[in-house]
Length: 370
Ligand SMILES: Cc1cc2nc3c(=O)[nH]c(=O)nc-3n(C[C@H](O)[C@H](O)[C@H](O)COP(=O)(O)OP(=O)(O)OC[C@H]3O[C@@H](n4cnc5c(N)ncnc54)[C@H](O)[C@@H]3O)c2cc1C
Image (cartoon, rainbow, N blue to C red; front, top):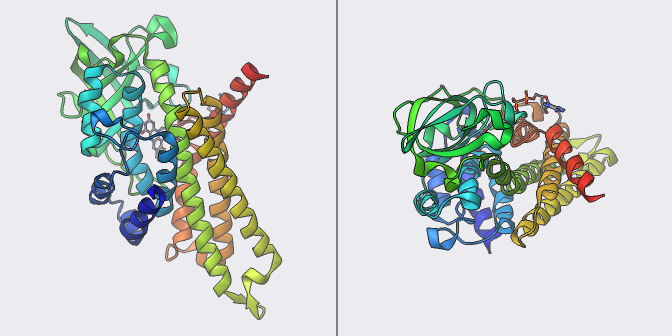
């Protein structure tokens, strides 16, 4: 039922507008609100804070349909839960009531970790938070922050003790209207152009010490990384949905387009390409569902989340590229949706930990297992 609800929403409210949002770089605020009103975006927020009270498994199901609707739309919706996960896993009761409550009401939030010179190497970030009475003063510059221009609050990672290495990292909640918060201009990205990405600068930003996530310094690293165990299966499911959309479009086209007296689907190289696409999509879907199911069972899913993200991201790039190939010259034109899907697939290999970083995590996890 949940899949049907999400699929109907994607078919009616996302797909008809996706090309225009992408062309104009228009943030789909109204459609995000509608998805929220249907209960599709706060599935994992516990019921006591106004959310759906369901698990990652259900989030994966909806995530696939959002990516099928449009990958940019899926990312534009995704920033809020990415910022909310550290509050779910490590926030104080008061933080959960206030900020998960806001997520459940449909506001947008953003996850601010990356900096101009710290992406994969998170520990090299420069943002610092200094205690001053019952406040912290935050200074630093974040980059590539999804949803920043529309966010009501930010999860911000910075050092409270630089000498302690990653143990010195702490997470903070910063309301977007706090003095000293400044937004950069919207980035002109290759794909997923309706999603808002920009820098955020924090200059002498004062937050009450109640906004230190979890109420204790030094838990920031674990909390920010645990958020990825929850978000990666969903981002991977977005990639699966995007690939499925491309495969379906290529399938329809291959049955219509004639060369040498028959539909191109009758040429073995095209039909095998479609068979491979469908098989890879199914394999990626199962990895996402497994990663979601495992964390719902209360188990650590770092390995499965990284495997799902790695496989789905690389798969989506291959499948969308093959879909363009099936379309021939028409695939290269923005007239047809496969070009947008191919441009939109690339980022899955980069954000939320690049494909290289996922391989490093998988190796590390295997070393502990084997
Ligand atoms: C559209 C978009 C949205 C984003 N949204 C957010 C967001 O909401 N919040 C946020 O905090 N960040 C966000 N990011 C940032 C994203 O997570 C980073 O871009 C990503 O982690 C890679 O970091 P980097 O760009 O600094 O690349 P680098 O870390 O400089 O890496 C460059 C290349 O080197 C490779 N590499 C790096 N280290 C190693 C290694 N040890 N071994 C092998 N290869 C390596 C990488 O895989 C990559 O291919 C977003 C980025 C984009 C483009």
